[in-house]
Image (cartoon, rainbow, N blue to C red; front, side, top):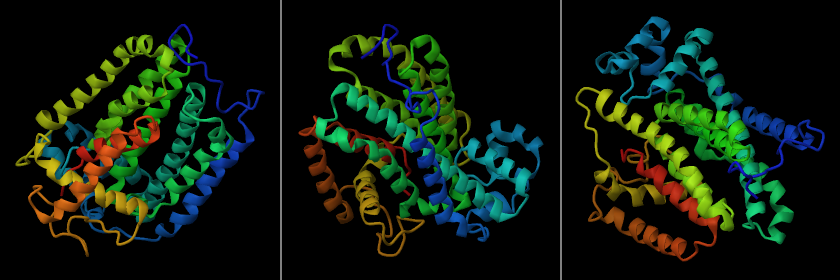
Length: 369
């Protein structure tokens, strides 16, 4: 149910009836953190590779806090930071790492592992909130409710251990992925928390969610998909009998998120553009989306032949299809269209529809090369 202030009355997820954290959630967090360090502690002895040499090892820019003033000057930022896109939050994380570890690579790998562990924990608690909503709105059947309690832990364990995560965790220069994910998930969790509280006490969580959303965008551009994801979540979990009134109360919140997104687009496309960089409008990347979608789906289901460069790695086309007229795009396009049709006719299965749209939104913000 939704209370008078426009928020669902969700009992505290961490409560075990006494106001103290439930033991099972504490054990779940310990399990997730332990698994993450078990899998990735072997990276602590690795050195710097590939872009690490540019953005960290041979980069005096991160050694002085006085260089923060160059973060708003495109002519200085891109040349000194070694970055080719404007991701100041990621660059700032290297400043903190240098203050702690200097140029010791093991410390940077430790930071990446900690971030990935925290992301797994965030996924766990987000799923707890999501499944609580599903139970309240009838999306989970009586049979599903009996097994649903284990879903957050199982999915979080898969998130932590999936081989597709290795590049983002092992590769220091790829930190933008796990850092964006951290702020993205933290913003989503804050939003869900705000939605479950009365409006007055939930305002602080909405503001926190907005701030975290902005940080996710400036860690990596894929973070800009979050407002659309929030709308999808609300669309599939809002009680049917309250939806008309519900959307009226959400307009202001969605507008604030859209404003943050527009601010980021302005900074990224107008104010902080790398000299000589071509900033596309998005249209030219659409022919590549089908190929990318199928490739990422393959990696998710069959994580073999992993590569840091999926457009030019072993067994892949030397170039991601630029138009649907290229043979490499025929089969992926046909499969994607078939999946889209299946999703449209299965709209009652909210998780399927949500996953497909969220994946497409995320891909649309990735560069095709």
